[in-house]
Amino acid sequence: MVDESNRPSERAPQKRGQMVVLGAIALAVVMFGIVATIGALEAGLTTETGVDAGEQAVVEAELERGVGCLLESANERTETEEGEVESAVHDDVEAFADRYRDARVHSSATVVDVELEGVGLDRADGANELESATVRVTTASADHRAERTRTIEAGCPEDEP
Image 1 (cartoon, helix red, strand yellow):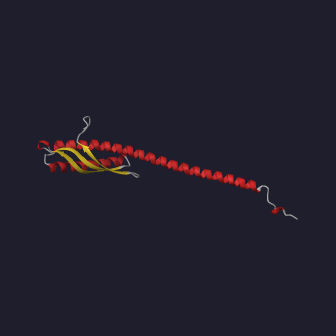
Image 2 (image 1 turned 180 degrees about the vertical axis):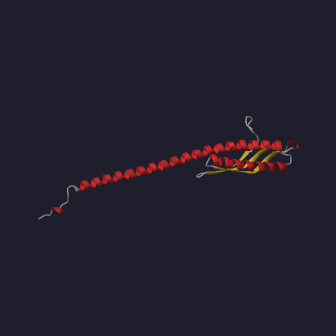
Image 3 (image 1 turned 180 degrees about the horizontal axis):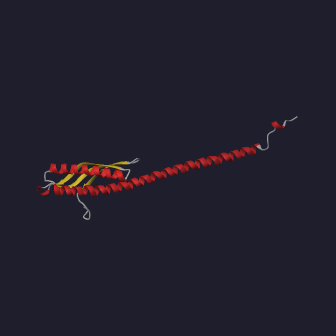
């Protein structure tokens, strides 16, 4: 006598096939989720970099104007002694950097630090006139840090103080 419980089921290959199909669908859903997550993360990183680049351009323009006007003002009010001119510019740039950093903290998450590295003087006609200043600019945010050395020419736009 043959026991029916020992007989191979006619439905076993069909059940195995269904399991393979379900496993493949589950694997496809997981892979799609991983790809979508990676794509979203890359898009987010690209956007943040773009914001940093735009903000960096704003900082550069503000420093160009601010330090340029500061140098022009120092030319008008300092003595002709080289040490006095450099000392006055150093003090002015330090005060400007403090005020600028404070202003940026209230309007942006980017911290800007400005340090004077040197000044360029024109020693024509026995006078020491400031031509430029070399500053080191460090910008830092939560995910971005940049440091640059810039030489800024003395001068203030005519339509602005």
